[in-house]
Amino acid sequence: MRLSLFTLAATLTAAGLAAAAPKKPNVILIVGDDMGYADIGAHGSKDIPTPNLDKLANAGVRFTSGYVSGPYCSPTRAGLLTGRYQQRFGHEFNPGPNPANEFGLSLKETTLPTRLKDAGYKTGMVGKWHLGSAEKYNPVNRGFGEFFGFLGGAHDYFQDGQGQNAIVRGTKPVEEKEYLTDAFTREAVAFIDRHQKEPFFLYLTYNAVHTPLQAADKYLKRFENIKDEKRQKYAAMMSAMDDGVGAVLAKLESAGLEKDTLVAFISDNGGPPINGSSNGELRGYKATTWEGGVRVPFLVKWPAGIPDGKTFDQPAIQLDLHTTILAAAGVDVKADWKLDGVNLLPHLTGEKKDPPHAALFWRFGPQVAVRAGDWKLVKAAGFREGRKGESNLDGALLFNLKEDVGEKTDLAAKNPEKVKELAALWEKWNAELVAPTWGPPAAKKKDKN
Image 1 (cartoon, one colour):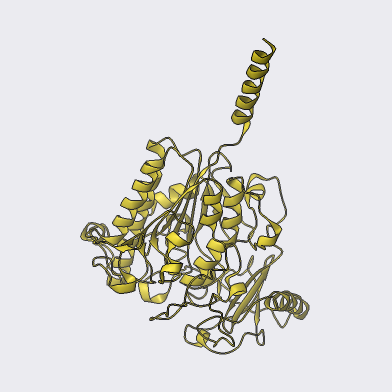
Image 2: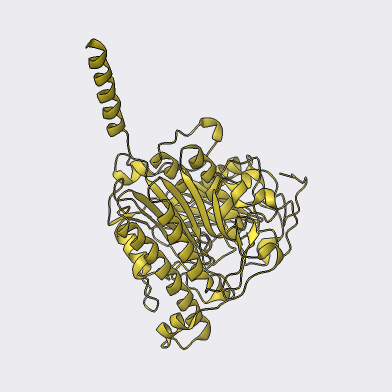
């Protein structure tokens, strides 16, 4: 009898502990490509309706000062998946049009899907990788249990790629007939359907709205009122991606997973002039350290964990998503991981009132920037100028972003002490970085990763 009571008590205790254990949320991390900051309704877009991105913004938190750690595609993704400034491991630039096999996300770095996989998550990726084409860099060898997409940096939306840029499932090329944005949505919804009974992490990286400017007729017809052909195609591509986000959110709702799923959305950098995008009042564009190059749409929704319908005005960066997702999943971050990202959850719930970061930093060749509070010290350049030279703060300009988000009025001459303060912060950070492994300026020493 005593044994039976003991067994019953142990069983009830175990059941109680299991019931008390927090539920691991599903995680969906969505990345748009080369989006203009002003091209979603939540940021004031008038000519391109984005009802699903707006729904995501209204049902969660919209970051008004959300940044990425680089103004270019591959570096931003390297930072996102590692939670560390990519300049710490030489991933400062894109690889160029013909990357060699040594290009890829350093094998010395641990990825977000690897950490989540170790925590019991099913992990999958759909879309653009752009972190190495050699098999050792393939997503299925970097923590993802499943992968459907392409390995390079740009892709035709109607035709299969060739060689290193083929559409692949895992490591095997496949034939794809559907408009590529729609195909990625289809695969994302299917992944959710397959894994709705277990905690999952889905990394959905649309190549929309990156060039080439190609849109299916059903999307183009929505924007017959836009007479500029470039803007019309861009709008159609945005609309296709917004539909995709809507399909993903609808699948979560129909499967009863909405409450317990953390969904985040960012663009990988600001919009470039070449694709018809608009960064609104922000100065600059992709490939510059002006606000238009590094401030991006940045949305997070998790009904079970954070408030809805909120804006967050303090500066945050995509590196934070790595650490925040780990925290939501119950993964203890180790000090020796040396993550630069911050857990945003206590800031979003109001538990912490102080800013997540004392300062944020950028280095892209000779282009540099640092933001501390409302102040930003920046030395930016056009696309071609930004691909040569050495990094330093000579001639940097100073702006108060609270009063001048468009970076129009240089206040450096009037505030020499603030210039000195921010420059010292940047120099201290820069001293911790390494030379670029590839791309301009030429690396002094090759790291074979």
